[in-house]
Image: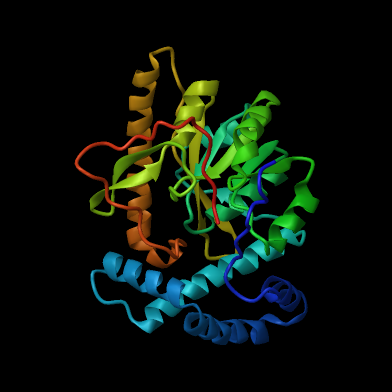
Length: 313
């Protein structure tokens, strides 16, 4: 028998999510927003690791030493995302729309009902796209990192349980079986592809001035199960909603596996190039409060373990 999985916790007090959800429900915005801004300073003071990684990242991207006010803006942007997640998890309707000028391949794929692999990153409102997929009645298995205190996911499960399920990336004994079962049953997979800790396949790509290691499992799954891949990003639209940016759709063709993987590398590099432009334009929306993806060595790194999936924290 395998030993129980040791679950991590999201940062903050155990009662934090419930308190924020209750405050959002009962406290008027004119009082709540100043309180959240003040509370963000408390978070900056009490979360030294996240504060350090935020300052390191912002200094790197801004090209100057980041100050405490920069770090506060980074923390507050993430808090605003958390408040939106809690509102949606509590039953709010997702206000997501394809950005003007975006191609319709993503929308057409959603409307088709065809199983697909939906990739995204810890950037902007991208973490809300699961709510969009649930509201559009897409059967989706979301690959996530299971933590002890995540009531927004519990509420999300109650709201969209018929359409959305979860596969826990930190339960490796069941992971590969769960992925295969979901795909065999016609469900799509949704995963975030910027953290390499739980990735079975990684390769290096140009990002923020270096060749950096990124998960590449999503494309191996695409080739293995002959599924399309599309990457989506969500940006605040300035009106309380989310503007969705979507990549072209990658589809394995009749070529060899290596030919398809090379096309996949080109596709992912284009996705990362666009992401880099957005990160440089909106650095406080990069919600990875941890070190940047590691720089690759002189040769391409490709893990040899069986393909499974990536998750998020």
